[in-house]
Amino acid sequence: MNAVLLTGGWAHPSDATFEPLVDLLTEAGFDITMTEAVEALPPLLAEGADLLVINACRFRMLDDRYNDDQRAEWAVESTPMVRAAIVEHLAAGRPLLGLHAASICFDDWPEWGELLGGSWQWDRSGHGPVAPFDVAPRPDHPVADGIEPFSVEDECYRHLAVADDAAVLLTAEEDGETHVLGWTRTDGDVRVAYSALGHDQRSLEEPAHQRLLQHLLAWLTGEGPA
Image 1 (cartoon, one colour):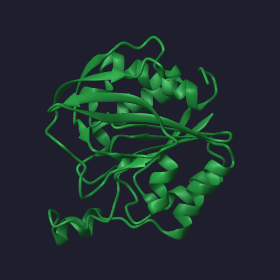
Image 2 (image 1 turned 45 degrees about the vertical axis):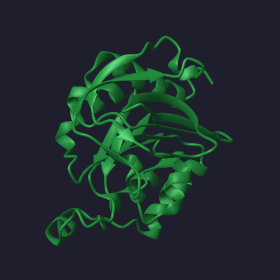
Image 3 (image 1 turned 30 degrees about the vertical axis):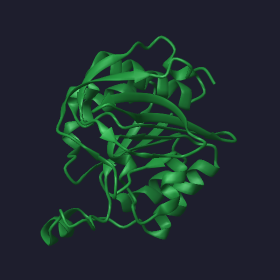
Image 4 (image 1 turned 120 degrees about the vertical axis):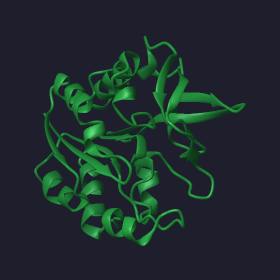
């Protein structure tokens, strides 16, 4: 099996996540093609990738918190070719795994949140600094079978917009609120999964988090429970 991995971007260098992600994908039986270039997705997906993994932070950076120099280096718009390539990948029944800042990506493409099952809301979403917090898998979700609540050192995303057809997988409690941190969605034969965890190695090398990702990869490829 072949996996295309889009990584890197603003505040999320690829070397912070590359090794543990590649190890997980390799153990799951994937040969990996990695790119930090959004524009490289169309030719790579056209080769018939069995899995698309978005573990990147690529967006337009329109918020006032970013300056012109940062935008010049990191800001990205999604071209019609990139959008079509992702849509065609899913239409062919091939799965998508979004990790961490994937929910922030492609902020000029409203349908991205629908495809992923949810998205970052610039007027509401946020996160604090990297710190330990507890993650609770939903016991009624088949992907969570055998995975107990665990602690992870990560960014706890808050107030993500979750699509109505997404099946909530992960939650966390912060400041008296319950925040959704992961989900799966199906559309016919298409399987999509997202986890807001995975800012860097501290999270991705946590054994319980690795087990969760192994379960997600098995579900995406049809080898785990439906």
